[in-house]
Amino acid sequence: MNLFSASVSRTSRRFCILATAALALACAILPLKHSVAQIQEKSISSSTDPWWKHAVVYEIYPRSYQDSTGDGIGDLNGITSRLGYLHKLGVDAIWIAPMYPSPQVDFGYDISNYQSVDPQYGTLADMDRLIAEGQKHHVRVLLDMVLNHTSDKHQWFIDASSSRTNPKHDWYVWNDGIPADTPGVTAYQKRFEHEGPNGKVVPPNNWVSGFGGSAWEWVPAVHQYYYHEFYKQQPDLNWRNPAVEKAMFLSMQFWLDRGIAGFRLDAIPSLFEDPTLRNNPETGGINAYGDPNVGDTYTNNLPEVHDVIRRMRAMVAKYPGDRVLIGETYLPNTAELDKWYGGTAHDELQLPMDMLIGFQGDHATLNAADFRQHIEEVETQIHGSQPLIVFDNHDNVRAIDRYGDGTHDNQINKLLATMLFTSKATSLMYYGQEIGMHTTTPTRREDVRDPIGITGWPAQKGRDGERTPMQWTPGPQAGFSTNPHTWLPIPPNYKTINVAVESKDPDSELNWFMQLIALRRDVPALHSGTITMLDTSNPDALSYIRSTGSGPAVVVAMNFTAAPKTITLNLAGSGIKGTIVRTLAASDPALTSTSTLSNITLPPYASWIGSVQ
Image (tube, rainbow, N blue to C red):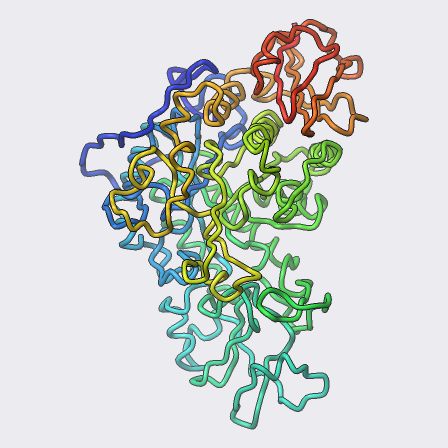
């Protein structure tokens, strides 16, 4: 946020949003390239701050956002028609999940052409129009870039799998396998036995695909196995071959030249595998697909990937407008996260995703002490880089369900939003999060669309539940499509959980999100102030103060429990001398008249934000 000219002013009292009508867009012929640098920063931003440091980034799963053609599948023109809503919400950039040509085995994450648009989503002209209209609405466009693998229908792999002598063969990771009678070969490896030119062979090691089965697939035409971290239809690229890096960088440049503001890099720690193909450590038991559980020591987060990222950062830096690299980085700790920034050199990703607090499994725990510790950790252990704390995406049960208790879900969603928008981190949200959309998991295997769920049912039900269509109105198909047969069913709660209904309710989750985003943009302390923890021994409430050193400081307090909690906040250690406060925002009406930092009673899961006078 805070990207654009001061004329685009929103305040915390402006809650009017577009709900039911798509924008009327002129069908003008657009140039192929649009300069991101043409978009001006808002006056509140520091002249030296890149736009992404204060941004609200909004992930869109294109199949599920808005259908403009009536085929039941969302598309690019549908996204364009909702730019007015995104602008009023306060979004600065949208990250669009893959919309490239694809067989859709993994719904776009299996790419068959990196330099075009899948016809079901539109055309290159539609993408150009989205970028241009985004500029008019002060919304940048980020694309998902899948660098780890291609589709097996990509021409590169078709060529590579045709012959060992084909020039593209070494663009992927191949192995002859090992003799089936090799000492130490497991019964699991023998499940994938094949007849080689010199007898029976099995995969070279115990590597398991993240989507079930061996990570090695046999190709009779070349008498070799190829490696696939994910589906067998997603062969891994061989990043040890310089030709692969060159080709992928050219694909990125194709979109940068068209005016996109940067990339979210899918599964980026997985680019390299151990060249000696050592077995991953066994961790015991079996997974949802019946495979042995193994670690990823030799298939994930290898040091060679950082050399690629540094070169990628240098390539992207040649473009104007502070283009950004965001990484999908599931990492074990903050020290590893810091490496993805480049440590003290700050020369790798600008925004690796911090999943350490936001993704604790399907049944996460709201623990004030854990949140406090992690915020302090990420503030002090990443060498001054910009945090990016993430709670929601297209691969995980929605946070409202993971953290919710079934009774206070709305309040908990508001609490998570408070932390998302009032901490120093860049804000990344997922479509529908702002209205409290829930995960709607299929109850029957025959209804599952996600191959993970089809393969792993019932232990693994797939990711359809968090990818259901956006709920715009209480009307037919929730305003998502005119087609009653949408690609995934509309959740039954759409009559009450939707943009149109919530836009009229001042206490709705949608209006809370809008109020927080406006405060973050317009209040200097929340926009760019330091953060200092308060009441640090409190196990039930998380409180902190944001301050710029000049002008009013802002105190944030959140109750992490289902019972009322009374707190007193002492500012002595923060350097702030005021004791009288003015309420800026409160998720519960009981807090709106709060005027002192003593004996504040926070209702269950309530959030309060006040300006220190």
